[in-house]
Image (cartoon, rainbow, N blue to C red; front, side):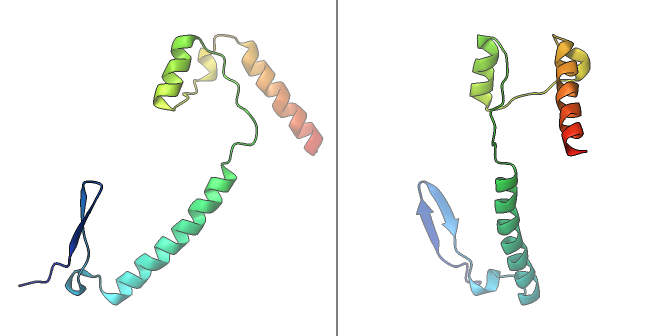
Length: 103
């Protein structure tokens, strides 16, 4: 009979602890641990890099706002389907200004 380890229940979720017979081979286990450590560090770097530093302004009606808040999602649309074509020109002007500053 295989030792299946012990189980514990936390907040209604049953978790089973590994026993020695359930563990990965040492070489694979080492690689999984290396990957796990790498991912923890990389994930933190990505969180910092993707941190919102300036506000995003989005003009919408009440139904749109409620949809954003409920789904916690903002959908971006194609430039060819904008309600106001001047939005594209405005964005291009900002990008050109930044490029000129950097040149």
